[in-house]
Every structure is written in C-alpha cells, then in structure tokens.
Amino acid sequence: MLGTQNNVQRAMLVVILTMAQALVLTACRPVAPDAMPEPDAVITEQVTTFENQGETVVGTLAVPTTSGAPYPVVLLLHGFTNERNELPVGGTDETMYGRLARLLGAAGMASLRIDFRGSGESDGAWADTTFTGQLDDARAAVDYLATLSMVDLDRLGVVGFSQGGLIAAELAAQDARVRTLVLWSPVSSAPDTYKHILGAESVEAGLDAATPLPVTTQWGAQFELGRGFFVDLFR
Image (tube, rainbow, N blue to C red):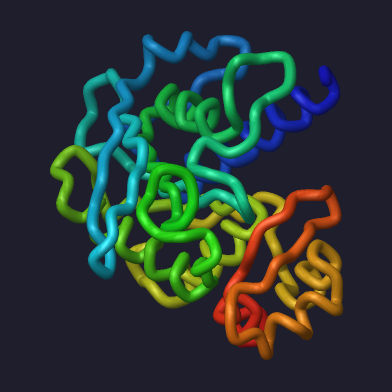
C-alpha cells in the first residue's frame, strides 16, 4: 500500500508542477510537498451542477481559501467506470482527485471535478455512455467555468486520468480555451485498450448490438454498454 501511495503522490506532484509552469501562475506560489497544509486550510469545496443536453451533470468545485481571485482553474476528468473523486489513495482517507484538488488549492489553483453523465451522481444511464458524450460533458464543464467570476478561464488546465485522458486530449485539441493539459496514465489507442479490458469478441459484438451488450471487464466487473460506445472506439 505504501508503494502505491508514494506513486500516487509523485504523480500528483508532477501534475502540480506541470500546471504551475504551463499556466505561468504569477499570483501563485507552489509549496513544497512536506509543507502542504491540511485540506480545510487550503480549499473550500461545494457540490455544484450544470445542465447538458437536458441532463444534470454533478461536480465538486474546490476554491483556494487564500486571496488571489480570479484563480487559475483545472478541470479534472475521471476514468472508465469511475466517478469524480477517482480511486482511493491507499493508506489514507483521501481519493486521487480529492487529494489533487487539495494540492492544487495549496498552489493557489481552483479545480472542478465532474461525474460524466451515467457515472456517479450525474443524470443518465451508464449503458448510454460514449466518448462523444463525455467529450460534450467536458466542453459543457468549461462553459460552466466561464460563468464563474472567481476563476480565470484564461488560465484553464485540464487533467485526465485513464479514459479521462483520452477525453482531455480531444477537448484540448478542439477547444482553444484549454491552455495546458496533463494526461495521467491515459488511454492512447481506444480499440486496443478496450479489446484488452472487455475482450475482442465483446468489442466486435458491440459494434452490431441492437440493445446494450452485457460485458465483463478483465477485473471481473459486469455491466452493459450500448452500441455507441463501441462505435466511438474507432472514430
């Protein structure tokens, strides 16, 4: 567990340093890892919502408690079958994105982590999830951030973990408002990745499925995915 925790911590510090450098944070002073304040000292968090295509997307907005608004802001996109807080950090009571929000706050950056539709607390059915739909959710999240006076959209970064990395890369390629990008263990070849996770036979069957297809992941999780998910793999 300790090794896993240290690996996560190192990855998060890379994210912080990358964001701090790329956004040219003139008003922010990144702090040393051993000087990180406790969560309550650096951020305030609130659950927030916005609408996309008639459905509600739920997120957590974390804002630094220090002066300096409008703050640089980072959009955090979760991975396949996960939700906005991401995986737990071993040996702690924190999650990956919960901790990352705290570390970003300590560096003077706000963050928004969202549940894609069909995941977590957001509206929609998981079986209807598609890469296209998640990309649209990410774009809608940027639109939402543009309405907030406490954040500086001219200093917008995006972090994507796993499948969220694939979505983040596509968002950055299409939306000029994204100024910096960090990909954390991203999906690079969607067809190869999901043939490995779901099995090549399931991927082939999904391309012709008239109704949501029952699938089993390599780690034993079972659920259904619609044809749109499989079609999007090859776009």
